[in-house]
Length: 361
Image 1 (cartoon, rainbow, N blue to C red):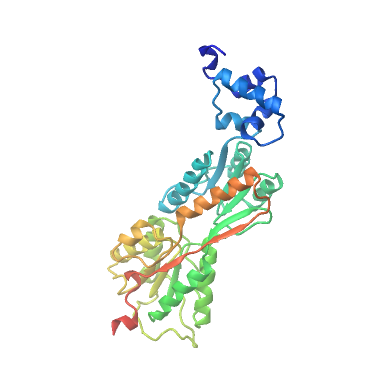
Image 2 (cartoon, rainbow, N blue to C red):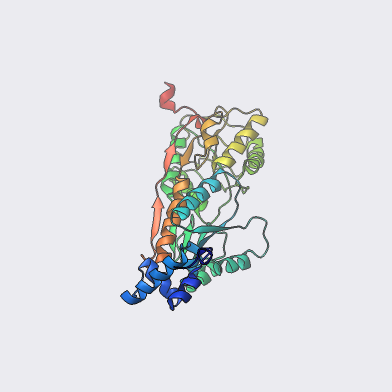
């Protein structure tokens, strides 16, 4: 037996030296992941016992030419949506024995170079939305680095995990039309991903009802961004608010609206919607009496706002968890064929769009 000092801080390299084999062979013997003869395995186990060696995830990963870490690229780390997605991702990654390297691109220069550098330090990547240019995504795919796209349209040879957007946006818009609203505004710019899919659903339903869809007013997806958008939209400066055409079908309830002011503001997410509500209050407008407001995500603040926010609930934490599991499958090689996973969403009706006409009777 080795003396007590020999067992202090023993490494996989020392085990390999004691057994007279390579570190890759030690890894295979300990993990049963490859062909190792009975005699060699016995030598490895004897060396492990003599050195009181405890395998570390990092040591075994290095023996396999791996990093024991995943990379994830986010556009921002502030706000409840990103926090929930990241929490779900980290929880599962930790369960799977992997650390997480996070790159937030907000305010960063040379983002694409930072992404390329991160690729070289991890076993696989998750990329959120359109934070990374298509050309760089293609580079990652061609490098055969395991890749999962989160809340972004699928790309050939890469996994994708996202929430359903279009059908729920259609249901939300139809619900507003059921209230009798006929002039609309949209707050939050197209992002080429989830939000673009939402606006597609909104536009489709409005067009089907003879209403010219408005152009989304660009703003940051924050309460402050929503507040600024709300000040513009609700002060009567938004001349592009969607209105019913001559063949419009949605004017039944005759909801009141000021000159140039929409009767309903459909927001890209809940934070934007909460900002719009703040702007409405500052302008002396009642929500939903003067203007209806809706959001997306169903963050905690949406449930406790006054008025409580009508929104679409998406499984934020499950998004991150699903991406972590998909990436682990690719890294371990248990699955080699890319897959696309779409998680269901749900329309949540609350008081910010007012009582339905049928409920008023």
